[in-house]
Image (spheres, rainbow, N blue to C red):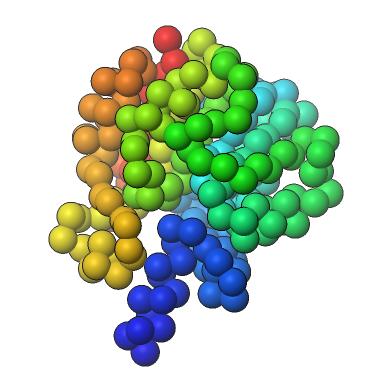
Length: 204
């Protein structure tokens, strides 16, 4: 049982195969409360162009479009399994309002100043070079664009860091500092007990 628990939650970083597909279904359901609360701290209007980094099973893409009717939403994920799931979940709007690519957050395949909003939900734990990722986000955001990181706050000695290989944890304050160092302005931290946090910055 212990090995199954570890194998299952290790799929958080890069879902693959049967367990990966199970994890993506779990994420789509389990991340809903955090995502919906976090998106309340983002300013939306109709017709925005949005990006979700580490889009997983694609549920956040649907939630973003609900906040900006008539908009377009892009997703990127390093996992082939995630890309397939996200495309299937959004198949009715795929190619017209929803676009999903396989790739890495430290080399985004889009032109500069393309997006009004960029989100990252439960994703920063797995980025090997966060400063580079944040520079890429800054590059693709329009002036005045918003970057919102949503996560459950995890202590450094949590069991999760032992169970999930390659997982790194950051406090909201550390992420705030990193966003400011990357050149984002008006960086704010929002918290909801017991463990939700949203860190939002604005592209100058």
